[in-house]
Image (cartoon, rainbow, N blue to C red; front, side, top):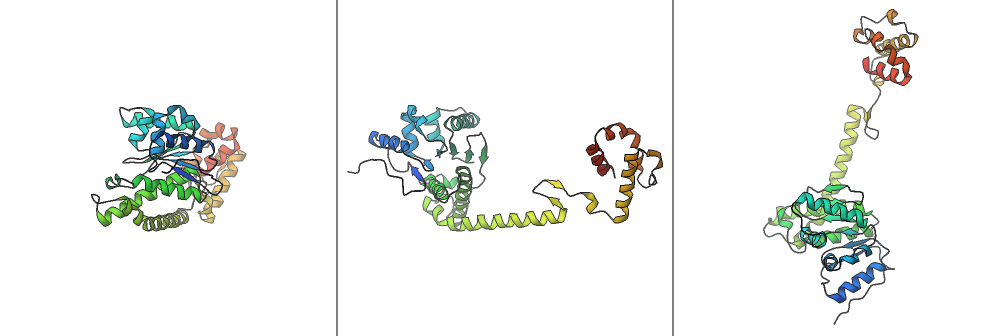
Length: 287
């Protein structure tokens, strides 16, 4: 008979507990002992979460920044029955903040909840993925990403997206009704390739959009208009600007050419000379 005992973690980069371990008392005690000695990224799923539903006083033993991956039933065994999805999400956020853990609440729109209260809803996936073992596949993907050095938040968000994408690919192959966890696993290589291709395409689109619209997306601000204007118009703008500074509002030689600009000199005079930077901004906007 196999005995449940804590494992030495010196040779591991990450740890997942839960799928298939059962809920016997011996297993529960071994799980709690393992948590005491866990110093690496941790994922709790399935029976590891069900154990805490009967030992709620041990919840504070869960290490900070642990990832919990419950479905609705497993979550409500811990936080209690909820009347609607909004109440469930609110309580899940409170639990995440209290434990300082990440929660991946699996469902029709899987949501990643961070200790700071941020919620990220996933749009990939389909009803066919509501099958035995599908959640274990997600746990494995998260564990693999943690082992490669990804942060907890990034590991959750990437894993949830790719897991759902693999489910969509598998659905197109075998249909929703006959979809199994094995089909999701077989579709993972194609899902990763699609994700890489999508990221590359978004990067190219961003560069193209940036060059076409002359916008600095990193700072989210338009490039100064003088860089796009003809030389003659830039000269006109500089002369108008000089008249602003010298308060020669009635001597502007370009009153007819830029009527909208010059006729508002006196209106904006007080505010413009209160702040030099505001002056420059208004000049750029009005011309």
